[in-house]
Amino acid sequence: FYIHNDAPLSCRLPSRPAPHVEIAGQKPPEREYVPLVFALAGTLQLSHLHISTHLNVLLHSVPKHHIHPHDSGVLDSGAAYSTSPLSHMQGTASKRLVIGDPLPLSFSVRWFPTPALPKTEGTVEWQGMGGHIYASTVFYSIVSFGAGVTVAGAYFLGVPL
Image 1 (tube, rainbow, N blue to C red):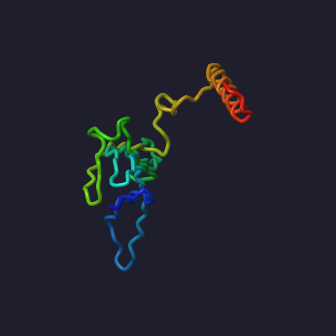
Image 2: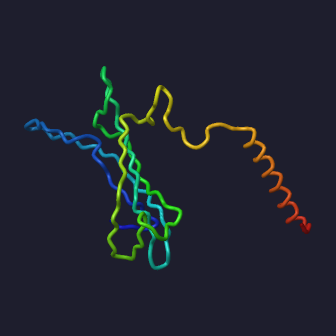
């Protein structure tokens, strides 16, 4: 692989297992692939790179439409990203790379049986950060906006604070 800040590290995964039966005289069906792009977190320096080497890989498959729903084994989509520790310059989860150095990667792979996020008792298990607007959030936003307008106005009008 070639790592560069303008070219992503990527590969393609077969979307379904290879067929085990071939019909004589017919061309085998063309394989379908799902792209998997690795988003590497790190810092680009003039002489080297600091890269977080632990990656999370999330794979989603197409659900089967049977009485007992389970994984069909057909890949629908995937994402891979590295998690950067707060101190990315040192530690076991990051690596300092110079041109020609090997890049050891470790993966945490999760396979979801549907294209949706997993659910518990009919509700999505994790809905992301937040999800609700509280009075404190509105108050903080208004105060921040007012402070920003005051400082910007004082700067542009030349009023010493």
